Length: 166
Image 1 (cartoon, helix red, strand yellow):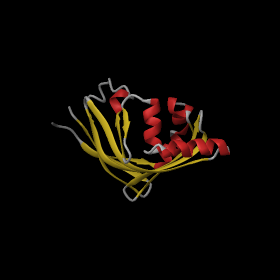
Image 2 (tube, helix red, strand yellow; image 1 turned 120 degrees about the vertical axis):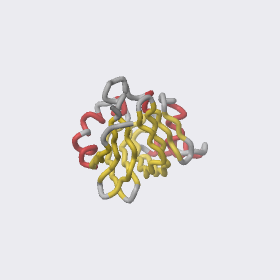
Image 3 (cartoon, helix red, strand yellow; image 1 turned 30 degrees about the vertical axis):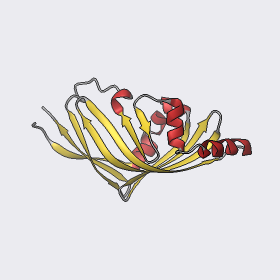
Image 4 (tube, one colour; image 1 turned 180 degrees about the vertical axis):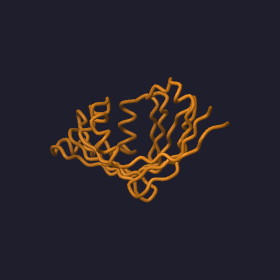
């Protein structure tokens, strides 16, 4: 395999500011009313303001650790370990419904993924896998040459190496 190997650095500001409109107008924007991403100490911290039909307004905080990132021609997957802190910011009834859902066992993410059954996303009580092939169209010449490897996330920056196979 030949090609260049370099580092891509993605800042919190790029995701939180430059991509905000695109993210909130994507299909995920149907549920996400606001978000904040932070990169610190090897973790990705994600704060979400969610609107879920039966549960109302929800504040969800996640700490994500990238366990595996496979990003090469024909195979694009992400596996993260996570912890979550989820609470209702809606009415008392909505808060009780959220607590009742939590009594069934498992995490909020597990429950949502189990109910919505989104393509390519699976979650258990501590990890989540995403088959990016099922969510994003990678049918372009660029993606047929791109290989990414996760390096680290800290000090407000996510870093990956990239290689173009020629």
